[in-house]
Length: 143
Image (cartoon, rainbow, N blue to C red):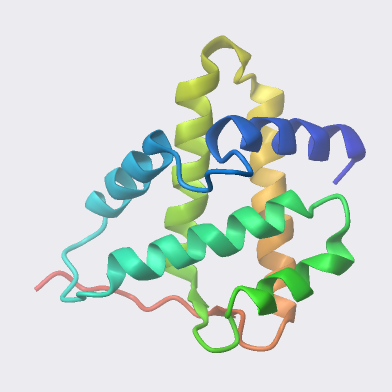
């Protein structure tokens, strides 16, 4: 990922997840909307897990310019104790992109979208190399 794409994503991230307030209203709403699109899950901790995934992902994106520091940030966030499932990571990533698109209107260009997708893929790759950071997704079958 090149420096210009990293800068684009990090500037975009600041509009939806300011440093002093990690969960903006629009981001919380988008996380809920993404979760509503999932198949029914008999899972009382789903919202908590998705918020945890969002926190891990946000921390990692803030350090995208220094990928060697992401593992430490992730461990500090308690990921070793509670792995992030792929489905929760996907929900958090989709919520971030949806919130960015809504808050940045015309500024959400195809180049910014590609930068977001590239950033999420890079973070997923980095997290999958840390011990138990991103657990495999569980397939949910409709009842």
